[in-house]
Amino acid sequence: MSLRRKDQFDEKLGALNPNISLPDNIASTILESPYFTRLLGNDLSQAHAVVQEEKDDQRVIERHAQENNVPLQELRALMETMRPQTDLRPFEGQADHEARAAQLNISAQLEQQRVGLARFHIEQRTVQEAQAALQQQHGQTLAGLAAQFATTQRRYKRNFQARPESSSASEPGAEPEGRGR
Image (tube, rainbow, N blue to C red; front, top):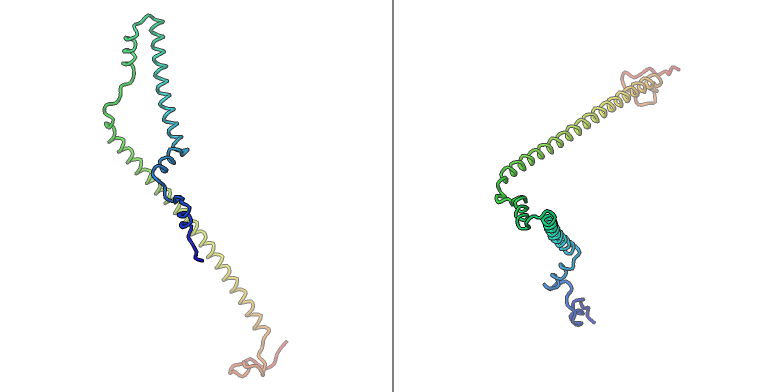
């Protein structure tokens, strides 16, 4: 009996490979996705709001024309002149905008460098304080060791005298043989 891969079983069953999406499957997946549906919903609601707002404006104009006995066409023409005109030169202030954006970008980079430099100085001061404390502690430790060594040395010299059987008694200039206590 030979081992078979899962693909071979899928082929025998006639199943499509689920790892390979067909183009219509991809499109239907995109259309059915909640993200895309939400985007479509936003666009449709905004378009509906714009249409509804225009209808409301027209109703207000018609009602005002009826109440004041003003010709409707003249009132509509007057309202059209009152609406803000579309900007026919949309790129006129682009150079100024790009200059402001570049200036803001440079000032943000300088601020970032200033903050980084301040952080570096704070860290350096912390390191220097730690080194000074460590050197002081190390100096105190060395001084303590030296004092302890001197005390031990004095105690040793006061209490120890070489006996004739010790190796130091046979050396020239050795201590006297008697032990005085």
